[in-house]
Length: 192
Image 1 (cartoon, rainbow, N blue to C red):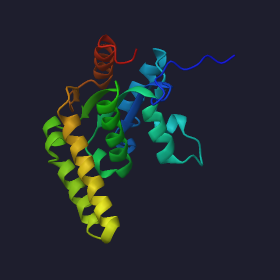
Image 2: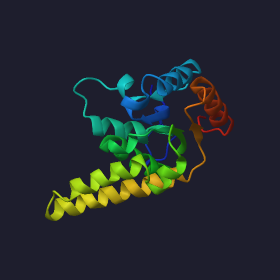
Image 3: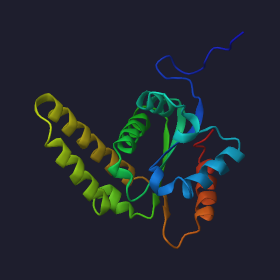
Image 4: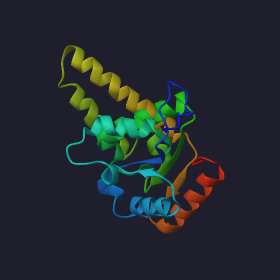
């Protein structure tokens, strides 16, 4: 006999403790790899896109569902994070969940200055300039919808840039930062 979900009817059942949002080319084989393994070893159910998606899956639908079914997210903001539409779409959904539910968010500023995220300067400015340039190529309703999406991405960047998080510099021990992040995150009950 299946036990009914205790989640409110308008909120999906929680499948994951943590959703990790990251730019694969920047962090998959280092920081995010350490983070994922440590979470897994602690028994924390974690969604990481290349670990849970199957060939042929509808990427956007699966990612949105995974975010909605996660108690929290760790967003690893790296220098090219904002160049990826997928990362920005994930971030917008994560920030929506944070404002609408009890979804917790921990930003990790990976070799980036938090103020560059908050104000979309540095590499983030360059990425948003490219998104805005792309918007100019559209016409009519499509252009209007794309501009709205870009504004939402910028707003999400500002919001996450204003959150307290972990900063990983060139001189940081990535393994130590992962341990510190997990200790802090677990202490605040974000995963329980």
